[in-house]
Image 1 (cartoon, rainbow, N blue to C red):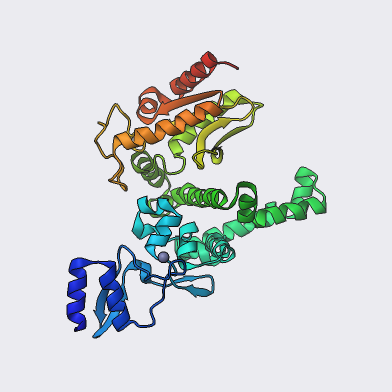
Image 2: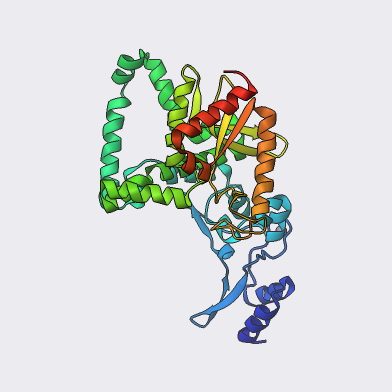
Length: 369
Ligand SMILES: [Zn+2]
């Protein structure tokens, strides 16, 4: 059979059997699944013609360059789904765009290589800053970073300020330079990397105000940025608005260790193996405040159960979001002495002071301060 007919036939039927036939005929040395030795067949597998030559297509077929090695897809979608059932519900086109445990398994990348790759990608280097911010701003950021490091990360500075010994200084640098390893050691492989990823995303998010300022000037930049936060970024990392609230709230907890914004506390559910980041947490009192964005948490005052408020995940209904949040909050209530939930729209209509009082009232009702 001619390759053209094969392609047409395959595009119509898209079966694994047909796929196997075409591979045998046109790609006799095709790579087989490491786990089941079957063909490596994925949801987006297809064939195309490039310069008259038949080629394998589909995102999943691209080899991927991690660190210095090129890795080829080495297991089939069937085995991947069997080993990690959650793959089935993930956004397929995104799974392989980043390093994670699924990519590791699918491409046969060692965890060591994966960690190295993540470290390299997120390391603060001049090259990475330029990649992220562009030539001019990247260089500026690198200079600022070096200047800050040169002042605050010297032994003299730490000795002066904190009375450190040289050994303590060395130990400190060691613990800083291996953040991923530290997280993985403390939380296990999967969770450690999740926290690390969240941390990196948040860094990106925190600094993005600089981007708006660089584009629009100081005043206008901040205005646009805040608007941007209000409209779109609730739920994706902490928002600048919630930080304003928590700055005020934290004044009432002097003497306690308080966690919010960049310094988030989290709770781990052993049963569901889920990590929950808390927006505001007071350690000695074991109380937390969650700031819920109307869109991200589908405020029932605004959305019907069948609405789909997520802009990026249209398959999520408001009911799905409520169920998810209920699981989360039920779990948190078993762990916390008090959990207070503040809705974004209430916060806008009440303002900071009234909201702070509301939170304090709710906490006082339940107990301790
Ligand atoms: Zn397989």
